[in-house]
Image 1 (cartoon, rainbow, N blue to C red):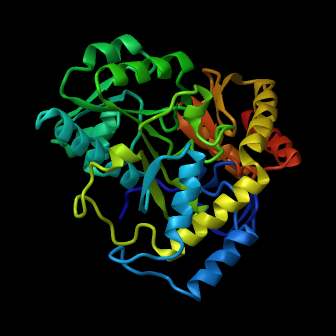
Image 2: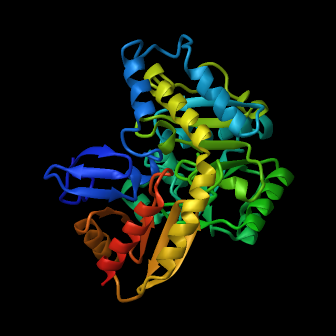
Length: 379
């Protein structure tokens, strides 16, 4: 179906930071499938783990246990500070769907049938299901599919007063990104997130942080919210967790997770052995390679180099999730196409900004070469 405005190139092979198209052209991948292949393409340990699991056991129903899923849950729980439970699914939208359903269930159990509202921020992106689209603060994406499910409101991002005024006793949760990825790579301030945590505590609402794009080392910490020091009640993730194998996860503090009873939520493929084994291998490599520290160091190099380019007016983001705001004379889509012509994969995250999300194992030489290609494209 024609749901994508695809660019005229077909990628057929990848290795590390390099992609090859069907004509044999090499490209540096500084988008990683929208922050998915964070260990690079065809990572040998992940590939070997997938192959071994495929020859052992691909799938069993969640009516039964398997021996891989609990290991992934334990690692994620440890990264998030412990005392939590994990629900596995297949994507970021599904992880946010789980979080919203959990928040509604928790709110109604603790505050009555009218406590089901969720507040999110303008500029946010939480998914394409009807529910996560209703939570997404981009009206242009919502218009085609009205009427959307009720109970969702948006307020200005990084504006604590706006949130304060919107939080009545119907609010079950606040859903935010630590860095708005699709909204233009816009980080939330630490002061704002601390204020949101305080408001949620005062009004007995859950704080849900969407880490689908920012989680697992991308921002220079394991999770984007860690830059502020707050602790959420629920955290959603996907993208980098499988390095290309579809898997998502919704983590919640154990007392919150207990709001779900058997039959309240389910998925056929979530946490099945193949996807879980890929995730386990990814987490093992990430921990060994200390990817948050690597992303922080490499991100500083990328930011510094981009900031020196003629035609770049601002560089923002965290770690290796970066946006370069271009001068008024540029159209970001045109510049992204010219980058692709020169063998660099980036995208126009807004009409005026390019997004960079290279593998977290990217080399200094690859960063320097990518910036040189951006300079050529701008010229």
